[in-house]
Length: 210
Image (cartoon, rainbow, N blue to C red; front, top):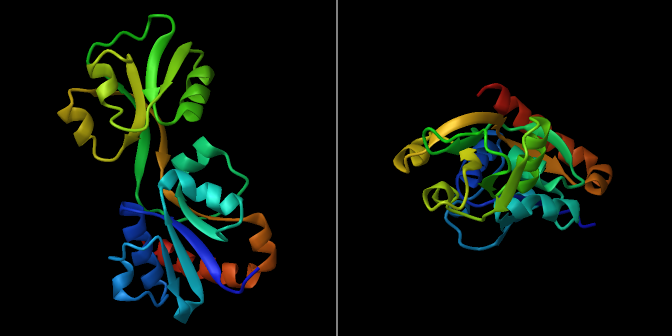
């Protein structure tokens, strides 16, 4: 493996908050780092390379070793169940997984339909609750499903609850709180343990102050 440490990060809110954490931990990221449209960004000063990916792909890149480290939401880790180690709760991008539906939706009907982009999490949750449901996987606009009669309920990420409210939906259950985590490829952790431990320790000091 190369001496360069490769880190996979999701685009969007997590990227912005993670970049701020790295800077607070005294990693020298150039100003243009935040605005770059590149998918691979090299930071020679830190001997680091960043891969910008879709959130659901970060754990895959880390598992297969094309990235040594990654920053992924706990929701992605639970859904994908990849062979990676979780090193640190970064306590950023806080949100939660919730069940929602239209007001007065009955939950007594057998085999209700539940739409979500988290089929594994939803299946596990409802099975543990003893509920028989049919899971419908969607990739976006999950809130639309109850409005058009595709599903009785949804399972989705909630941050402020504004999107649910604007679409006339109400929360009907709380599955779990979500934050972003620092993850590592097991082989990389053995071969680059000193550098990785240094990153973990520096970030942990910043996180403890949040």
